[in-house]
Amino acid sequence: MSKEQVVVYGAGGHSKVVIDILERTQKYEIVGVVDDDPARQGNYFCGYRILGSLGYLLEQGPNAKVILAVGDNMTRERLALRLVPLGFQFITAIHPAAVVGRDVILGAGTVLMANVAVNPGTRVGEHVIINTGSTVDHDCSIGDFAHISPGVHLAGGVTVEPLAHVGIGASAIEDVTIGQGSIVGAGAAVVTDIPPGVVAVGVPARVVKNVSRA
Ligand SMILES: CC(C)(COP(=O)(O)OP(=O)(O)OC[C@H]1O[C@@H](n2cnc3c(N)ncnc32)[C@H](O)[C@@H]1OP(=O)(O)O)[C@@H](O)C(=O)NCCC(=O)NCCS
Image (cartoon, rainbow, N blue to C red; front, side, top):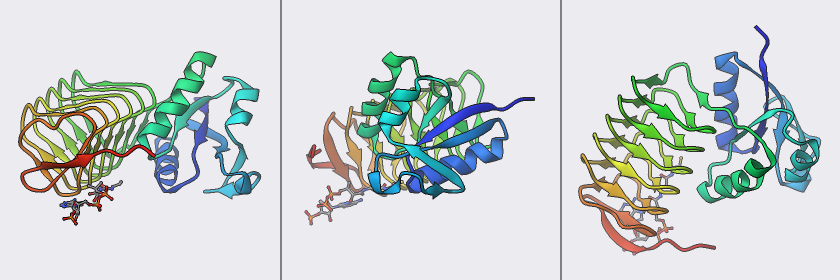
C-alpha cells in the first residue's frame, strides 16, 4: 500500500513525539519538516530535512497533507486559520497504543499519544492534543485546539472548550466545563465549572488569575 505524504509543521519536543507516532503507524511518508526559526532552515530534525518556514508551505501549496506539531494552542490555531482557506488538509496522528472507543469523533489534525484512552460517545475537535497516558471518559467534548496534558483524567460528560489547556496530572469530575482558553494547573482537581480565560489551580481547582496574552 502506498503511503500518504505528510509535512510535519514544527521542530520542537512535541513534534518529536508526533514524528515517532507517524513512523509507528507506517501509514505516512514524512516528506520533511517546516519550522519558522530561520537559523534551522536546511538542517535535519529527527532525520528529516527542515524544508523552510510557513512561506515555503504557502509557496508549495497543498501538495502534501500537514500536521501541526506545535504544542502552543494559539499557534496551532493561527497556523490552521492561515492554511485551511488555501486548501491544506490535515492528518490525525494516533499512536498504535491509544484506545479509541465506539462512536468517538476525532477532528482533523488531532494527536493521540501513547496509552491514551478515549471512551465511547466523546467528540474531539480539530488540532487537539491528547497527551501521553491521559484518559477521556464517555460523552466528553473537547474543543478545537485544546490540549489535554500527560496523565490527565476526565470523567464522563466533561466539556473542555476550544484552546483550553488542562495541565499535567489534573483531573475533572463528571459533567464540568473548562472554559475557552482557560488553563488548569498541574495536578488540579476540577470539581466545578471553570470560566473562560482564567488560570485555575489546586485541589479543588480555584481561579487565581486571568490568562495573560503576550
Ligand atoms: C498553572 C500554571 C500555568 C501557572 O503558571 P504561571 O502563570 O507562570 O503562574 P505562577 O507560576 O506565577 O503561579 C501563580 C500562583 O499559582 C501557584 N501555582 C502555580 N501552578 C500551580 C499548580 N499547578 N498547583 C498549585 N498552585 C500552583 C504558584 O505557586 C503561585 O502562587 P503564589 O501566587 O501564592 O506564589 C503552571 O504552574 C502550570 O501548572 N502549568 C501546567 C504545565 C503543564 O501541564 N505542562 C505540560 C505540557 S505537556
